[in-house]
Image 1 (cartoon, rainbow, N blue to C red):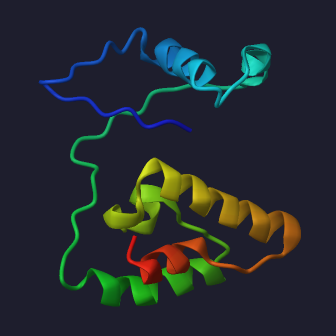
Image 2: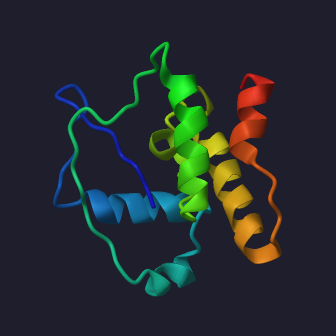
Length: 121
């Protein structure tokens, strides 16, 4: 999964952005060149105004929303899924993904999202 922002000041070419993104993943060693063949799908979804905007009510709402989602086995993570822009950088998002993978693979119920929020990252 990759997120590429664009604007009138930073235009991106819809015809080449997927290939450019995959090549960028290879260049940064997120993907090995020999593993590109294992990418089974690539598609582009364009959304306007997707960056979350914090509000004074957000934390109270999330205290209800996230536990309910977890009860439904929905683990909403990352900048958009967690609704926590301040813990939504790439490193935090990857850590949240690792937390979810550990939960699924190892039955580890650690919560990276809560941990990062408490650390004030």
